[in-house]
Length: 360
Ligand code: PMP
Image 1 (cartoon, rainbow, N blue to C red):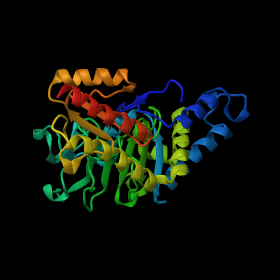
Image 2 (image 1 turned 120 degrees about the horizontal axis):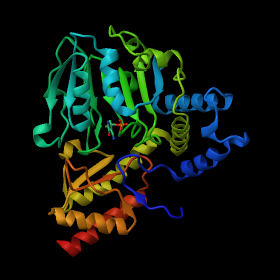
Image 3 (image 1 turned 90 degrees about the vertical axis):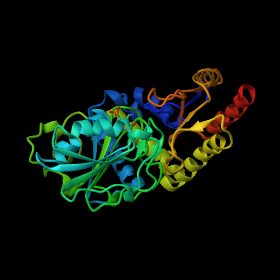
Image 4 (image 1 turned 45 degrees about the vertical axis):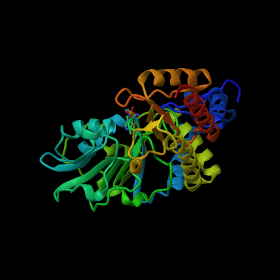
């Protein structure tokens, strides 16, 4: 892999090398058609096959039941913050939200435009260092759905047990979709921007149970109605063709690797390497409470901001980029999504030991 460094970016994030090289070829000439993939009509038989394959691989890899639609939408995960309440909440109705970080806060703000929001739990007073267990909050009986963020990208926390409820469960899985197998039938709606675990920025995957489509009493703009996209197989308008194609390649890569059970094992091994390092010393301090630690984004601090800046500078010089934490937590963040190689984690841990020995 010439000219490649270890990219710990939180997203857009590192992709499998073989996916990048295949995409680079297909951009110029897709399947010997003499046309590049990004120049092709979205209604051409070639692209329709690409989109159909991406959907069927997603269904296969995630085990999505037949009573769910898979939509490939635009506008980023942030557009879903509004589309979810627009489609699932009518005026005067209530929805329950768990506030576990920046992305749930943004979603709560949007939901308030469309109905009543009951924030059943917030970890804000501890700077979002944990996620709640189901016993920690109550859901109002009249609530229309329970919304949570499965992995808090900025704070490095993750739900290891999903909320238990008989309400439709809505999850923002932007930063941990497909990190392990899940039971999709427990969810009403799952959405995720592609740019961490699935592909490039530009497409947001929405997995929605059939009965939740078309039940809003709101007057919805056509593009903001899930029904529009469900009825037309995400081809109502021009879809994000290139992003969908790359998602398909990433899914093929994941399937060849052994699917979600195989990637879970690798992800747990990678995260364990880093958390063992953090736990072995007081030089590095993890931000997340141990029961809430993310397997995707590992957040930690050093004794002083000066040492943190030095650490990031030296790591960058050694070919490890993207380690600066988000400004709301400070410190460092190592994002190690599905495609991030194990050797990169080992290299970081080795550097952490060496840096500590020199600077403690
Ligand atoms: N949800 C989560 C968990 C995220 O990490 C992000 C962004 N990184 C978003 C939502 C917002 O995604 P987008 O930039 O695609 O709108």
